[in-house]
Amino acid sequence: MKATVYVTIKENVLDPQGNAVQGSLQTLGFDEVAKVRIGKYLELTLDTTDRAVAEERVKAMCEKLLANTVIEDYRFELEG
Amino acid sequence: MKFAVIVFPGSNCDLDMYNAVVDVLGEDVDYVWHTATDLSAYDGILVPGGFSYGDYLRCGAIAQLAPVMTEVRKAAAEGKFVLGVCNGFQVLTEAGLLPGALIRNNSLKFRCHPVGLRVENANTAFTRDYAQGEVVTIPIAHGEGNYYCDEETLASLKANGQIVFTYDGVNPNGSVAGIAGISNEAGNVVGMMPHPERAVSELLGSADGAKMFTSVLNAWRERNGAASTR
Image (tube, rainbow over all chains, first blue to last red; front, side, top):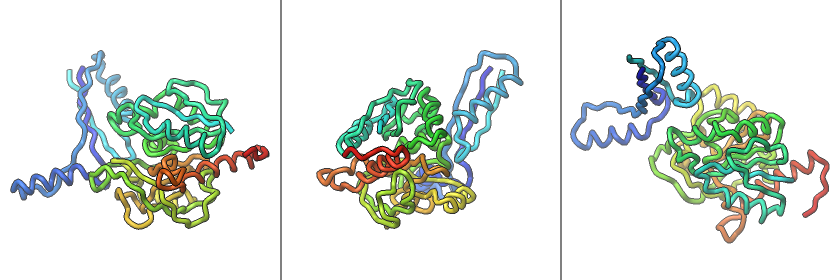
């Protein structure tokens, strides 16, 4: 089974990287870009076929390591 | 008093921390590897700066899971003195020993220069030799030293006197309330982005960091009724 994890900086936390990229896009003339937020994308390959178990395990991985819930939100998708 | 300097793969201020203990205090100090499972021999735990585990994923995220961190948590709970500097501060926040988190500097720049620091709490084990409100000069060297916590946490930090240092003058990284260092509620665990171990002699540009080390030794002596040997 494959898990795709998305970790994003919380809305109320400053994202200097996103701001820099937004500035760069505007320099290129993409003035319609009002905001850029940068996050992390992780692909995990799991040796389980049990969806319920996988969901519980990936949630634990996110809480313990993959995201710092003080500053980040996470969500994930399971496939297969 | 016996100090441990914790060494993770990627720690690079461990030598400076070790030498600060030797040069300022002349007390016993050991490097303790991240795989260690016993810190009972040590009275003070120093978590140095650097780039533990390459700062992969997030600064300090992987280091907080190292075997030695179980012992650092235990030592902190026992009331032993724990100081985390720079990456060490990031590790202590990731480990949940200190509230909040360190994010990218708002300037996006790696900032490396001396800064003015205001001593906001001169009652912690690491700051008792400073005067309350004293402004000292200690260098910073970080790309992710922007302290963040939510408003509720900030209010409790203020209420409990947990803000130990703030930047005096220009805030170099965008930290909430100009915070440069905080303590836990009990005051025995302190984390800070500036490097006191790099400011222990006028030859280094400032000797203002030396009092962090004399403070903790004095705190330990007071606690243990130990006579001054130096």
